[in-house]
Picture 1: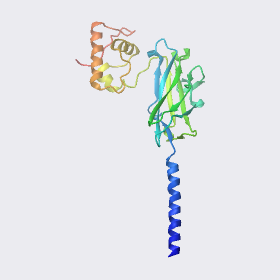
Picture 2 (picture 1 turned 120 degrees about the vertical axis):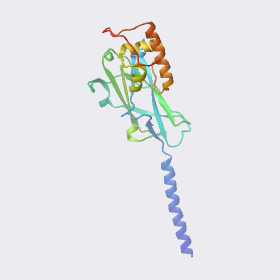
Picture 3 (picture 1 turned 135 degrees about the vertical axis):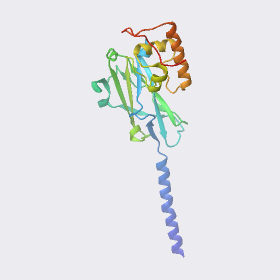
Picture 4 (picture 1 turned 60 degrees about the vertical axis):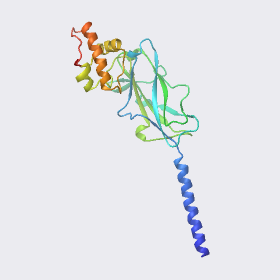
Length: 235
């Protein structure tokens, strides 16, 4: 009988140790970027920030694990081999301090599971006809381990040239604004007063398109080749 008690005691001790080890492991916090860089890169153009030589861009993070009880610093680095001025999709000039900067302080705030830091993109002459790419990498520190590998990097593209925004998709093309051209986009932003329709409900996109249509009816605008600028919205 005494032997049975000893066996039970040892068994509980073993499982108790394993439970403690699991709790310690589960208390680790994991940091990931919010977006998948393969499908959700950040794209910015200085075209919509006239007069500015630098802009701040929000980069979002997810926290895996327990909510923080105090603000903790985040550690990031730039992947030099993938970052810099692009030509035909390839890096032809490395990134420098003249192109990009981290903020003075990067922290993940307590009590939240999604947070952001703001990095600084800088305008240079070479962006007039080219893109610059910044690839950020999360680095582990005493507060965070790296989360899912696929979310351990973030990609930022920026230029001074005008580019087709992601929200100007097939639906917007077919039913609301018609084909994209830089001049049409410029006039739309100026006259309607919006530059980004990401996540906007279709009924509001239709309202914006109709407002733009009324403007074009009253004030015809033309492309450089003489083609009249039109939209596809009906109404």
